[in-house]
Length: 373
Ligand SMILES: Nc1ncnc2c1ncn2[C@@H]1O[C@H](COP(=O)(O)OP(=O)(O)OP(=O)(O)O)[C@@H](O)[C@H]1O
Ligand SMILES: [Mg+2]
Image (cartoon, rainbow, N blue to C red; front, top):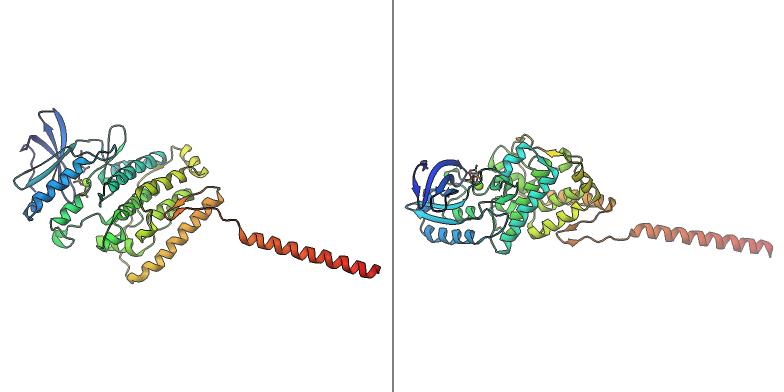
């Protein structure tokens, strides 16, 4: 796309190009009437070739403009000029969560920013809108260091306008954050966004993503087939309560994840009450810095391996939960709050020992009586 700097788009005077992502180009522009800087996201011209795009763009833009949440980057105007369709948003020059993670993020801030993003996702899901491309690069920061989630539904807009995985090297969504079902181009629902939140939580607390790969396909393969490496391999000090939450969000099967972003936030809140987490929070300046991303080669294996991987993940979640219980904490899971079950085997052993002792005492008593008689 040609650089639009210096041109006029609707009532906006474009000053400079800020950057370009997989699906659009972002410009800084000036709005004369309100005397403020704005960010304009210009969608690829190729989308406009698709029949029905105009109507679809209007519908999506109106939906985006209707979202009102403290942690969603607002879309306050949109328009079309020739083949150029654009969305207008506040201009935020404070960088993205991705850049912030590279600089280093305190444990406390990581949890605060993550919860803000998850609350934005929960709000959108209640309005039946999926994000489909949740990742730190799509989280902008404001001047008070609050998170604002951007790019809601853009993937869908491109998808519906005929951009496919195989055309022009475009991959819809970002493989590093893609749920197994999205990678397999299956049906997706809000639980796919919850998986992406799980990847983000892992990355924010561990310092690296659960899966890396030297190609989009190898990454997608890993999301489908491999269990996430235990976060404690990299961060042995990570409290078990938090490990359990991230692994639950990263379950391969949607039905085994948190079913809503609200459930995920609730589980995180509960985990934050565990003594080890409180200890860790207070022992800041603990900083998590994004580690250099490892590369790995594609390992071939049968798709059915997913069953075994799921068992491994369950074992990991199970051991993390067991540790939480040992710590005296409790944790809600996707299937509801976990209740404490009395240690049944211990009770049985005690009863057997008592029974044997009564028998022994009774036997000795009878023997003494017989001898006496
Ligand atoms: N409202 C904004 N204010 C300032 N900079 C922005 C704004 N929105 C986006 N940017 C910046 O513009 C650049 C391009 O953003 P864009 O969303 O197109 O790409 P991306 O997020 O890197 O990838 P993707 O296409 O997957 O969303 C990024 O550096 C982003 O941080
Ligand atoms: Mg983006």
